[in-house]
Amino acid sequence: MFFKFVIRRVLFSIPTIVGIVTLAFLLGKLIPGDPAVAALGLDLDGASTVSQEELERVRTELGLDRPVIVQYMSWFGDALQGDLGRSSVNRESVTALILRAFPNTMFLLLTTISTAALIGISLGVFSALHRGKSADLVARLVTIVGVSTPPFWLALVLILVFAFNLNLFPMNGSVAEHGWTALVLPTASIALQPAALIARMSRSSMLEVLSQDMIRTAAAKGLGRWTIILRHGLPNALSPVITVIGFQFANLMGGAVAIEVLFGMPGLGSLLINAIFENDLKVIQGVVVIVGITFALTNLAVDLLYSVIDPRIKL
Amino acid sequence: MTISSAVAGHGQSTSPSLRSRFAKNFARFLSSPLNCFSLGLTTLLFLLALLAPIIAPYPYEQINPANSLSPPTWEHIMGTDQVGRDIFSRVLYGARISLSMAVMTIIVGLASGVFVGAVSGYLGGVADEVIMRVVEVFMSIPGIILALALVAVLGPSPLFIVLALSIRRITQFARVTRGAVLGVKALDYVAACRVIGMSNVRILFFHVLPNCIGPIIVLATVLMGNVILLESTLSFLGLGIQEPTPSWGTMIAAGNELLTFAPWLSLFPGGFLFLTMLAFNLLGDGVRDYLDPRGASVI
View 1 (cartoon, rainbow over the protein chains, first blue to last red):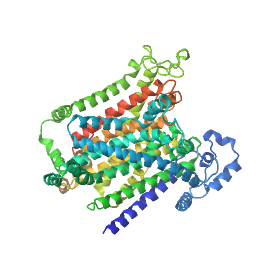
View 2: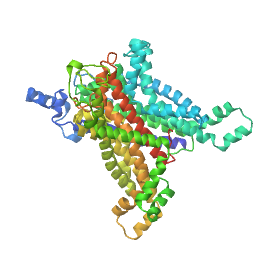
View 3: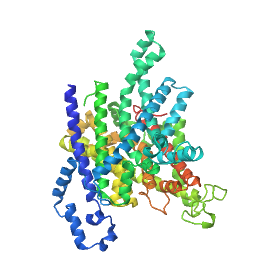
View 4: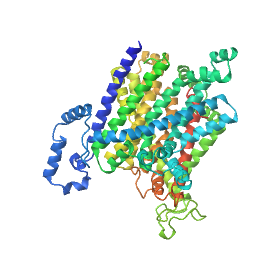
């Protein structure tokens, strides 16, 4: 039964991934003007500076002289084999560029989501246990402030206070240059929002579990307060929280873009923004494909994990 | 919306006039002090944006190199930027940009998304399956990445920015509307409409959709803060509204270069962005608690 569910869910994500690859292809077709001019890194006015032969050469090289459907099939086939084309700026393979940036982004995201989950679950459970009291109100206010703080602005405030005034952490740079201290400020900047959303879900889920009969039974049996909370309350409250964590992890891939640029971290976000400013279409398409697929696979993993934790859930 | 509330909503046509019902509901909504606060703050922000030409002490583009990078003073309560432009005036005009872009994005997203979702949910079958697969593809790419990629290929004009920000909203509205339509179309009164020979178009748009309005309003309110953040992020990264038009994101980015020397350049626009998001997030929560009490809330 479970095996059947896994197969179904995995099959379900195939059309999504095909769609993402297609969407990235269509993105290239949206460019106004001649894509060959764009591929040379020129804007529309720059077209007159290139010779006709040069444009023809680029068109043939990019396959733009073939019918669109053939171009699509070739893009799709190449993408399936992990070939996302070459950067028009430095002729490097897009896959290689992405493979270099991907671990940096993942490292930042994993640190962030672990921090956010730890803080969020603790705050949510604390809030639920003190329901209606002033501690609950404070925790909930922290949550709403957390959700509403723009991460890139928070990053600037943190840089000003902790890097410039207190000189505790580096202002920018990668982990390779400064070690783990380079991760503290970027993580703090983007962890606040997911932490707040995880806290929100943990609180309502914990409140729901705490009102169930089994908790009353556990209390009637004479179990200690913390045994009830940690062994009976929390594990049951966690399943919806895991979905939120997974969803937030996927969302962070977007949130990390501005932070990577701000802190000069060489991840997918910085790669994308550089590619945009250099008109490097293949890299833009490549990042969209990789981020989309990672997002879809994260959702797949969350669904599977969810069904392991809570066997009642079926697709 | 639950099935019972949908039925109740449908049956309410016999109760007093629509206006008095609205007044009663609105009074109930305002009975929570937090809802009063968030509604007051959002109204204030809209007013500031609307009245910017009257309130702003200086034209937003007026440069004064003799008074560049002045810290906050009585003359310039939020200081001035590198070319001596008044930050307060620019923040007020920035509110116009942020709010109008967000409202337009929500309108485009809502109108198209509700249409797509309603048709998908009502028709069902292959059409529904195909539409929902497409929706899933768009949902698989984080909003900011999709918007960045679209603005990168189309260019950062206001129209394309709204379009880039709307696409993901369309899918969100479509999903929520579809869910609501699926619930409502199974109700007996819809079958009754069919029995008396109403056309599908009339049933869907006059009898099913009006009963799906709750979750749609909730989503629209909740998304406002989100869209404002996205627009500011695009501007912050240099791909949103372009100078000299003031936008909070662009102002924060410009201040970043002089952060340690003139922190007011980034702090004030960022503070306004924070207040706006706070107002809309609180309002969104209030509206959700009111219209869809099953949803999780913060406060």
